[in-house]
Length: 302
Image: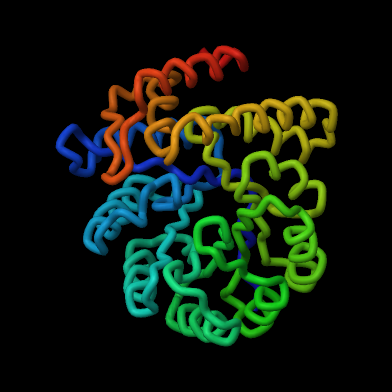
């Protein structure tokens, strides 16, 4: 069965909280409008930048339900429903589907390493239970376990609704092999870069687009690169590539980077939103804010 293919730029949207760390619907609505107005093709809800891992199941459902309702089909909406347990992953996937998500992104369980057969079985059960497309989420720096090309190929062959992957890896060879060995066999299989600076490489190899965190505060850079590449304006695409590679320094200002992204959004777009993050993460420090301002000025973003 052939499905609609996901293409383009899908920012992994920050989740905004108020000063008491409750979900801030008003700020989130402004963020969604900001991204849609910038022309993105889709939005990823509750990705890594959305702090999903620090939330309860009820909190994840609250955020997903509001965002999906507010997006209301204006762009494609994906929800990361991955969890350490199979039952929670299936529960969150069913919730996303019931709230009209276009698809789910599923990171592999990230506490204990699993055999290849365990991973295959896990994803097969998620795909069998899911009424909407499933995209794999490969982020070995966080899970400490990569999804091998062979595993991705087996899953894509076994389930028509496993429809793509976010490949958050530094090694472009891994992404290249998925594009050439998996996506070439499935017209509807989307390969997205997870790391911002791999967007151009992924597109040049035949990938579908990217899920870059910098698109939260500078969507015009990722969109500029994507549109220039699609239009064959390669010199222009290279200019945007250098910019997005430089902006990736934002992730190193402080660890973790969630507060940095929220501060960058406020510096550029004045959402009047709190920059609260979920503990044990911390808000961006004064010294970090100074470094962030210097980075944004370097690329003439403020």
